[in-house]
Image (cartoon, rainbow, N blue to C red):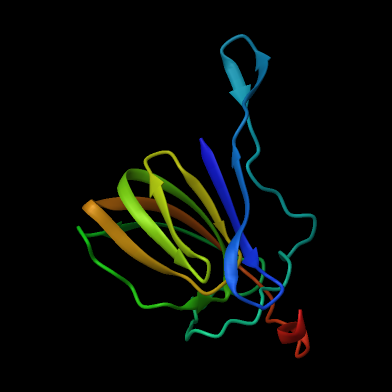
Length: 147
């Protein structure tokens, strides 16, 4: 499974900061496990300051919402950022994740970690279904825009 982790570059533009294949470790016969992403604090780290409109998910820092999202064929969302850390899995179809560094095509089984950065979605020719776990994050520091 391919895992994309988002962040921001030196200019504050949203981008993919890590792109790896998830390795599964065989822990016992018939049981393997891999960890695509982990945090070291609770609540998760502060999100970066976005430039696109904020979509307030209404999830307090550290609280969780799990949802399934469907995007129709060739449908598009506007560029936005969220107040959450999103752990998403493409369940079916394909979708383009639009970031400041361009479009990233995701297909069934791909994983993406959205760290509250500016992004948009464009459904593939057959649309897509995503599983998304959203975790509320603290607001950015007032000086976070300088990072």
